[in-house]
Image 1 (cartoon, rainbow, N blue to C red):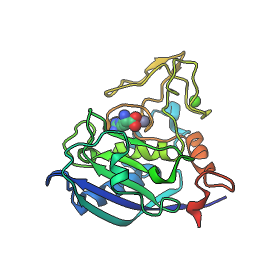
Image 2 (cartoon, rainbow, N blue to C red; image 1 turned 135 degrees about the vertical axis):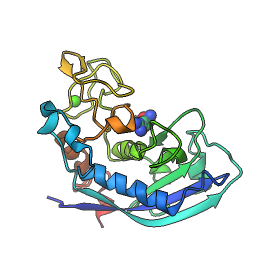
Image 3 (cartoon, rainbow, N blue to C red; image 1 turned 90 degrees about the vertical axis):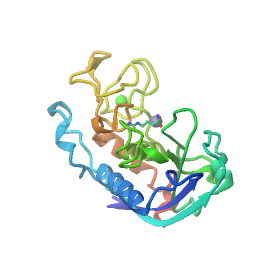
Image 4 (cartoon, rainbow, N blue to C red; image 1 turned 30 degrees about the vertical axis):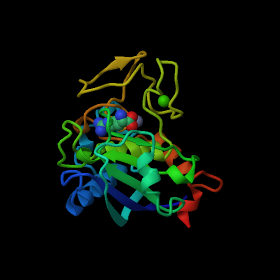
Length: 235
Ligand code: ARG
Ligand code: ZN
Ligand code: CA
């Protein structure tokens, strides 16, 4: 048992105007959301329906802000081709989660690299306006980062990116047909089971996602075990 896993975080704020240069207060609020969500101390956790209440997980993964780097750059919006990481490489990616906060083109809220990829591009990128209090409503409560860090820690989308027959490699998350959006009513039934629409790895609004499952916790934590892809983070 690894106990509480603490992950130090390096933030790279890359901005072309004042709005994109998010404040330290906003960054702190974002880290607080991340910790609440990963520790199941989010104040909407009690909205989980009884069907899934027994599956709610405290992942016992905790995040601590280590460094914030600020970079002014004339690029007004970055694409998902990792150019922002080439311009500002990750700092200590074998021991630190690197997060780039910037404007992203194409209506993308964020993207992440799964464990086991190249260290030069390891980390997650999130849209500056998705931070708590940002302008990207209904995606402005900081849960884009929760979702992306889920990917960074090896979680797939809850519907397995497939049509009832694709797996997210987590046994306690019900099979689903496709992404859910907005704020689905309960129960939303697909593939003959109730979708866990309130899971962070679905595509619903920030205010309508509020849990990780025990199976997701196991999948995330296994990458820190001996031989796992993020074992090096535990010094
Ligand atoms: N579409 C993005 C992804 O697949 C992020 C979705 C985040 N959803 C949200 N409610 N913030 O990685
Ligand atoms: Zn995703
Ligand atoms: Ca599943």
